[in-house]
Length: 450
Image (cartoon, rainbow, N blue to C red; front, side, top):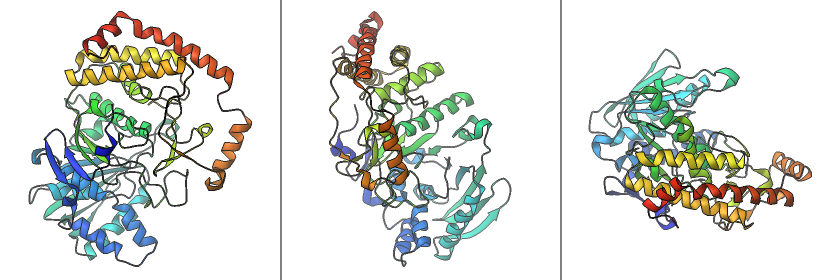
C-alpha cells in the first residue's frame, strides 16, 4: 500500500518497469529549456519574469521522467488536456533521437491562452532557445519551430462546452494517435487527479484501443494522504516538484495565474497500464475499483490538505475544502449512501480480480483488507490515526473561507453524536459483506485473509 516516504522523497528517478535509474541531475544544463529557465531566473523580478517561470514549471521533473523510459517508449506526439498557458512538456522532445519530429497538442476552452503561449515562444526565439518560429491558423491555431534539432509543432485545440457548460477532459477522438497524455496541475487534490486516470481509461475503451497512451501526472502516492497507483503500472517516478503549487499567502484559494510556491505533491509519475484488467469491466465496476482506492485507507473520515509543509497544513474538518476523503467518490458524489457504496466497491473488486495478474490481484486484496479494517474502526467508534497536521487558524484563512467556516459551525456541519452512532451502525452492517464466500475465497487465494 503506497510508497515509503523515504523512497517518495528521493531526488532519484526510478524507471520501475525498465529497471533503470536516472539521476535527477540529468535534467540539467544540457537542456535548452533548462538554459532558458536559468536565463529567466537571472532577470529582474517582475510579473513577466514570474509568468515565464510559471509557464515552464515542472520542466525538470518532466524531462527526468521521460529520460527514465526506454528510448522506444518516449513519445513523439503528446496530448496535454486543459493546458492553460503551460508549455513545460516541450522539454520531452529533448529525449528523442536527433532529428525526430515532435507534436504537442494542447486543449483549452479559453482561446485567450494563445496570447501568452505565443509571447513565451517569441521570447524563447529571441533568447536563441528555438528558431524558425511561425504561426499557423485554424481552430485555436498553432506554432512551428525547431528546438534542440527537432521540428516541433504545437497545436491549440479549442474545446466547446456541452450542456451545463461542462466539457469532457478527454474523449476517444483526443487520445487516438498520441503516445502520451500529460496531466499537470489539473487539481490540488489526489481524488480529482485520480479521476484523470478514469477519464483516460473511459476514452480508451470508447475508442476501442488495445491500451491507452502513457500518462504523466502527479504522483498521488507522494501526498500527505496518498492513493495507491500500483494497479495502473508505474513505469517511472521522480521526487522533483510536479503539479499544483500553492500561491504564496493565498491559502485555500485554489489555482492562481502564477503558482511558484511550494508543491502539494512530492513528485510525478508515468503510468503504463501494462495489466489490462480494466478493459472488460462494466463502467460501474470500473468506478467501484477507483472508489476502493479512495476509501480503502480512510473510510468515511475527512482528510483535507490546504497547503504543503512538514507537517502538512490541514483545513478544519468542517470545511471539507480540498481532498475530502470519505466525503466524495471519484465521480464527485458527496456524502454517498454508506452501505450502497460499500456494496458497490466489494462487487467491483470481485468482478475485477479474475482479470488481474497475480501481483495486481494481491494488491487489490490488500486494498480490500485495508477497507475492511477502516470499516471495523468506524464500527468500533475509533478514529483512524492520521499524520500530524498543523490546523489552519482563522487568521491565515482568506475572508471567504472564514465566512464558510463560521457558517458551517452555525449549521452544525460537524458530525454530531447521533450521526456518529448511525455511522457505526451502518459500518457494522456493511462488514457482513466481507463474510461472503466469494470474498473470503478471494482474500484467502491472495494470502490476505487477515
